[in-house]
Image (cartoon, rainbow, N blue to C red; front, side, top):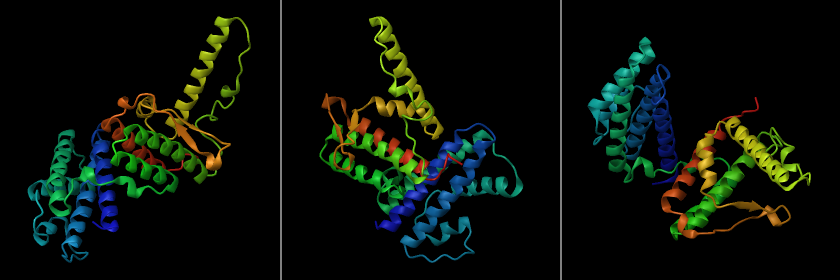
Length: 288
């Protein structure tokens, strides 16, 4: 598979997953998933046509692909999807939740059968990483892949943690905002020092300080539009990463306390979180 095909498949997967996300909303916004599903399927069928050398022109309709491209499956299901799309877009008829659910299942089946047949992989195996525009993030995700290849899950997971830190820095740099997860909005909390009073009082105030910093971080994460619960889970699995400003290129380091706690499942979950966050942030500017 060449680079252009990989990018086109990644865009198709991204659009499909946006449709899946929309489909789980309540009515009536869940109906918008029909448009995303339809667009992703049409883009995929055009890619199949290009991959097999079939010429299609601008007059080619959605269902015409099943006649022109040999081997495309799920014609009946996609005819149903097309009808729902026409009803919504051209006649303003909002689909019921059951219609949305049927469309999601049908499109999932469409991809499960057609992606392997035309491209030798599943849609889930198509990497969305190629769509990330931040070179700093991709640099550490490349290291992630190197460690995964040798089953060094702890080291791979650390690269995900570093990649996320680089994502936040790159995002704020892109929009010329000198803020980060520590200094916005409660920027002075981390500088509070112990008043050196009675021991229990000092310990209590230190806990309050940590809670303020955590609340500050939560506000900052949610302000970026990132799911805070997923972020909390991402941070909790570790490992803890430090960056040393005095070192060359602000190097990072980390320590793996117990390598057995890092598994293929946990590191893959971290990787997905970083990629999803990057794709979400690079297309928005929260400051305007």
